[in-house]
Image (cartoon, rainbow, N blue to C red):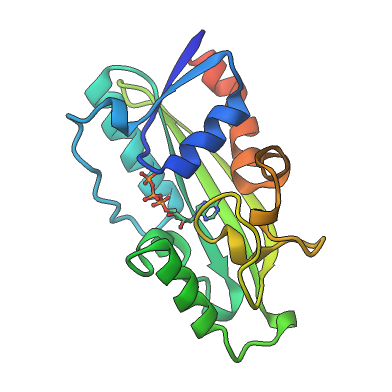
Length: 193
Ligand code: ITT
């Protein structure tokens, strides 16, 4: 069994990473390291925040650590909420509410958006590796589906389904996180995780 330290307290990301890596991997997350203080995500890029989280966990545990910084980039909002996706409004339902309200006068053809996921794998001695995955879609007019997390219920794929209408495996096959994790896999293995 391989073990990877995942510098995240987001249960949705954790479930997806565990499913993407498969049964041969034990993923330890922020919950397993309650002594590590929460990281202040004050960088203005996904790379900057992912590196901050991964570095903090690598230093504190003495092990290679993986971090995921991700978000929703909406063209009609000039790229917002972007790196601020988790802090766009206090709760998940409120974030979707606010997004739909901001886009209420934007016609379907102009509601293009993408999910971005940047992974950083950091070693205790300061080595860092990055991968980035994206997934293109549009912001729907209403919520649809029950799976996934975050903005998934309003993120529509080219086939007309939202991310929330996909099974976890279907989402993993085409998602920003799926692409970024598959690109990082050889480096995770090489790091001896
Ligand atoms: P950690 O920093 O502890 O990993 P977080 O939720 O604070 O958890 P981020 O700062 O990376 O993570 O914020 C990412 C936000 O972007 C997340 O809270 C969701 O609202 C959104 N998001 C990211 N990936 C998503 C996905 O696959 N589906 C839906 N929303 C997603």
